[in-house]
Amino acid sequence: MDINQVLTDVFTPINTYVWYIAFIFLVGLGLYFTIRLKGLQILKIRETSKLALSGVKEGDTKHTVSSFEAFCIGLGARVGVGNIAGVASAIIAGGPGAVFWMWIFAIIGSASSFMESTLAQLFKEKKSDGHYHGGPAYYVQKGLKNRALAVVLAALIIITFGIGFVGVQASNSASALAEAFVFDNNTIVFGALIAIAAAAIIFGGVKRIARFSAKVVPVMALLWLIFCVIVILCNYQGIVNAFVMIFQYAFGIEQVAGGLLGAVIMSGLKRGVFSNEAGLGSIANIASTADVKHPVKQGMIQSFGTLVDTLIVCSFTAVVILSFSDYNTIVGLGYDKAPLVQYIFGESVFSSAGPIIVSLFLLVFAFTSLIGYYTMSESNIRFISDKKSTVFAVRVLIIIVAFLSCIAGTALMELICDTFMAAMGAVNMLCVFLLSKFAFQAYDDWKKQKAEGIEEPVFHRDVLDDPSGITEWE
Image 1 (cartoon, rainbow, N blue to C red):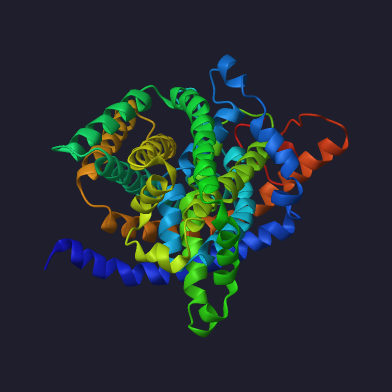
Image 2: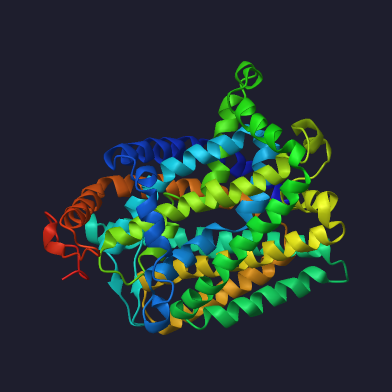
């Protein structure tokens, strides 16, 4: 029997059951954090957005990673294949109602993103490269005092994101490019180009990644929204029906009677988490790199990033698809993932240029995600071993994975990554819950200083009941 089929048969049932467990932790604890934080992600959105977009020039004068640069690296990791191919896949597999549940889980998940990012800042540490590093492995070892679990988490993140998600992003990008530019050995050529470009950025270190992300990510995200608006306006007669379908399929009688509502909800959760990564511990690694005066600042910034990714970028892609025609017609086209979006772009307004435009966006989004995933991997490999040779080996490994995945198929890799992602989310959220008192105390300190009229609060570890595991906030 084909090895791909064997692995598919093994991972399919595992994936199903692991996601049931992940649902409990991601949604249940996300709701708990939302209540404890009194809806911070929505009621404080003016403050979180202002913090996220402030300090644009700050990174030019700092040798460390600024708060805005960390926001852009995080947004670059989030805004990837999931915002184009993932949204299309969610609609085809779970119906238009999956988009509604993506919104709901993004709102819930943004509270989790605040918690994990704040913890990552609290327990971060400076490594030999002169930059801060942190994430689940760091706050588990220093907060829960469990080195063994911390090493397992570090290895899981490297495997899931540094290898698995890099492969998914690169291969989807290469496939879209191959669809748009047809010539002999095109996937090999595109794979080589992606790998070479990644090497040029990755070997420059975390600061070069930060500067690149700060310049490229906001521009490309804005351009994608502009192109989406053009396509939506060309199909303006279907805009109202697009939103009608989203709500109709989210709560429709047919879905409830057919027992499909659970599948719609789960599809929304899976694709939403794949896109915004809230609660998975991945963005926490990026949040820890920022040089800020208070850990809550980066927590609020990354909370806002979750909403930007799903409520804005994913939503525009969804309306592009659903305003094109009714759901049955869209399914009947026979396309899925990126090819569906490419087809709609071409048929709506851009003709033969449509697939090329979408593939170029996929290339850039996948590339920014790839270097974001590398940042996570570097933080975790430095946790296990801070030797230059080890870091160098991981850099080479990720570049090789990016190249080889452009040649191989993506279906099995996506299934395996999806399973690891669920497991990572469940374990990370449990750890965040066990350490949540630290994040809540830091947030109380932030609010106290704000109430006293302090424009930019400054954190000191002594405000915590137990600062023993905190090393960088003296």
